[in-house]
Image (spheres, rainbow, N blue to C red):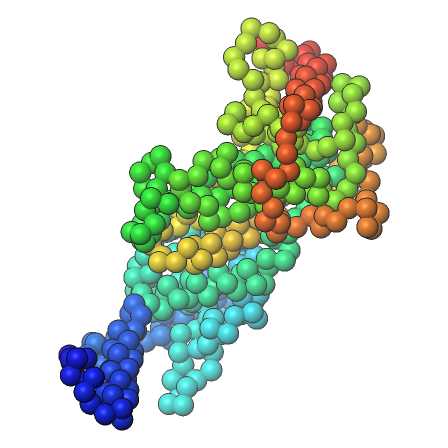
Length: 452
C-alpha cells in the first residue's frame, strides 16, 4: 500500500488524520505478521502431532523408573533401562544431583512448570521433565534444538525456549550459592590448599577463554572478531585447586585480549584498589611478611603485586624449580576450561543464539552446574585436615576488617576501571619481592624432594 504525501497536503485536516491513522494501523499489522523466529501464525504449516505423553513415558522408562517396579513395556525387567553410570555419562551428573536441579528449576520457573496440568480440552502439554532433559542434552552435547525432537517430542522453537528458561531457572535457584564470592572461611581453605603445593597466600588461578558466536550481528563484526578471525565473546575466570570457579565474567568482545579485559575487570578493580578481599591479610613467606593475597597468572599479565607469573628459561636451579611448580599449579585454570568445555559441549561449539544476553545466561548456568558437580565429587583434603593445617601453619592470617573501616563487600559488582587506581614503581617492587620470596620458599621446601 503506497501513499503520496504530496497529495495529502491539499486535503483537509480530518482527511490527513484519517490517512495517518490508516498508515499506522497498516504498519502495526505488518509488524504483527512478521513476528519472531518460529511459532504459529496464519500461512504456516499446522503443528505436528508429537504425542507429548509418549516422550515423557520413554524418558521415565529409560532413566527414572522405580528400581522395585516391573516395567510396563512388556520386557519383564525391573527398574530403568539405563544404569546410573550411563545416566551420569549422558547428563554429566549423578541422578540425585539432577533431581535437585530439576526441583529447583521447577520451583523458580513458571514456563518449565507448564504441562503438568491438562488444558481445557483435557490434553496435557509437554511435561517439565521433557523440557529439562531437552535442555540438558543441548548443554551437554552442543546439539541444535531440532535434534532433541525425536526423543523429547518437542519442536525446535520449544526446545530453544526451554533451554533459555532452564538456564534462567538454574541461575535463579542456585546462583546465590554457586556464583557467590568466597567468604573468609572459603579463602582460608583455598589458601591452605595452595600452601600445600608451595604457594602460601595464593587465592586462585586466573585466565581468559572465549566462546565463538556463529550468529553474531554483522554490524558488530569488528567489535567481536579477534585474532582467530571469528566472532567471539570472552570470559575471565578465577578458580581454585578443586576446579571450583569463584569468579566468571562473560561478555567481553573477542577483540579484547587478557590485558584489555584486566583493564575493565570489576573484580580486579576491587582487588587492586584494596576493596577486595574485605579482610586483613598477612602471609609469611621465606621469613618475609606480606599483607596481600595474589593470583597465579601467565606471562601476559602485568607485573602487579597481586600476580605471580612464571619466569623466562634460566640455568639457575632455584628459578627452574619455581618456574616448573608455578606452571604446574597454574594449570588448574586451564584444566577448568578443559573440563567446562568438555562437560558442556555447547560452549565448545559456535553459539547459535541470537542474543549475547542469552549466551551469558547459558554460561552462568554451566558454571553453576559445574560447581555443583565439583561440590558433589570433591575429594582430597578433608575439612578436619584443613583446620589442622591452618592451626599448625601460621604463615597466612586472615583478620576481619571492622565495620566502617573498609567499604568492600567482596562481591564482583564494581564497575571502577583499573586505570583509575594507579600503579607505580612501588607496585612492581612488591611484585618482585613476592616472587623472590616464593622462589626461596619453594627451594627450601622442595629442593630435597624433587626427582632428579
